[in-house]
Image (cartoon, rainbow, N blue to C red; front, side, top):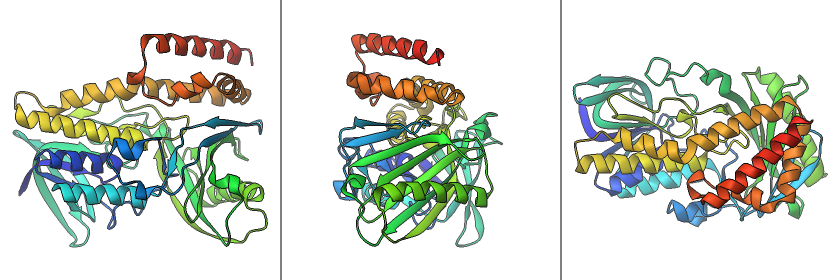
Length: 399
């Protein structure tokens, strides 16, 4: 049986950052990625927070556009524009592939077409079983620590990470990459668009339009599993509306991408097997339910995992899971639980979106603070946020 210090399952932003930073600290690291090409099968608008490339030491060559504005479209068809930094757009092939290349350069081994099958504890090691899809064989590798970051579709029902509410948080997503014969109107490349509305069958929908270097990413997510024809019909209607406004009369071709993503509350448990196995990224439910943002959270969870594994290697008294769980919960759990509750509250009555968006438009400081993590706030900023939250609640409950 193969043996390494650290196994990472999945090579998205979480797994790739974990592998690069652990390997850079001298930890023997093996990444198991199910796809034959890293990042090739990701349904994602691929929007990055301002400063993402600098924060995670990723070349800015991956950035396609730097939209300075985000436009929120409410269910009542009102539009609210906000300044965002600027933010950045890319594709997951470039983002994940670049991070994977940096991980290899740092010394990590990345094994593609390696599909995770099971975890088991054996003494002081964790055994990871995976299928080598190219060879058609099963293989096992023993590790002192494992970071599981295989995305929303990860099979964890038979592990200690099982979460009975997980399926209720899954979102069926479909995205078109729209390749136009000539450029869209200039405003298309200056704005990230988020749309909140009800489908023709009265299901809550989150739609998006993110500009890229050579195409527009236009997609939507609907909570619950849907038949393909119904989802395509919904997206076709949405794309038609967006292009009528941004690219009238321009011919185009599309490439479609579909998958399940996640929009529920984070998993209650993210560490198991005596603290040697850690769960991160979307597999841990680290996704903002109001926007679908999860790349920043995923990359940070990878950084936390790498730091915990490196520290545990230097001091064998503690398993890495303790430090990893503390850092991840402090950074994200409060905000993500609140965002999930907020989204559920908003979706009960459509005009509540307008109450929130109007308040954000009238108080730019409130809108700006909501773009930051909880750990960044001072006590005065906390008081301000609680006051704004109370004001919103009172107004929204009157709707």
